[in-house]
Image (tube, rainbow, N blue to C red; front, side, top):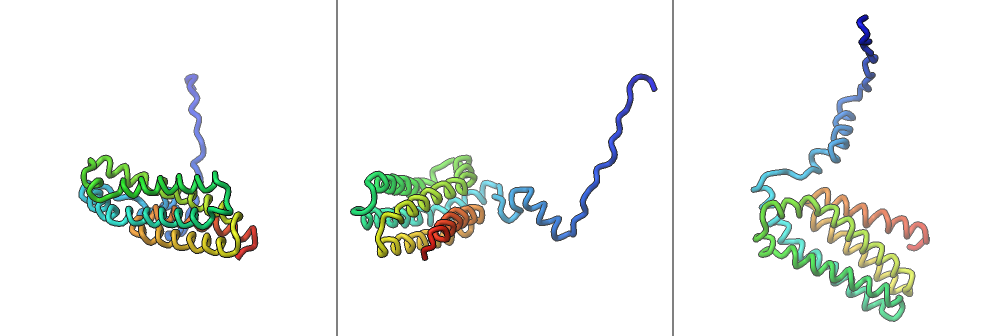
Length: 193
C-alpha cells in the first residue's frame, strides 16, 4: 500500500421484482406512469388547450351556479362570513371561466399554454378542495332539505368536474381524490347519510 487505501463496498443487493410489478413501480416512480404524464410538443399543446377551452368555461360556470344556489338556499341559516367565502369562491370560479374562454386561450403564447396545462391539476385540486371544504362547513348549518341539497350539489359538481376533464387524467384523478376522500370521511364521521 502506498498510503491511499482503497475502500471497497460490497455490491448493493437488488430486489428482483416480477415484470408486471417492476413496470408498476417504475410508473409510480416516474410520476404515476406514462399514461398520466403530460405529452410535449407545440402541436399537441395547442390542440389540447383548444379542446380544454371548449369545456372549461362551462365547467367553471357550473361551479358558479352551484355556489350561488347554496348561498341563496343557506342565506338564513349560515353565518354571513361563511356565505361571503362562498361568494369569494364563486368570483374565483367566474374569473377562471373567463380565463379559459377560447378566444383568450388562442391568443396566449405556447409557453403560457404549456404552463396552464402543467398547473391545471394542482389548481383543480386546490379549488376543488376549497369547494368541498366550504360545502361541508355549510352542511352543519342547514335543515334536512338544505343538507340534501348540499349533498346533491357536491355529487353534481364532482361528476361534472371529473367527466369534464376526463381526457386530462392527472386533473381528473386530483378532482376525484379531493372530492371523494374528504366528503366520504365527513359523512362517515357524522353518520349521515
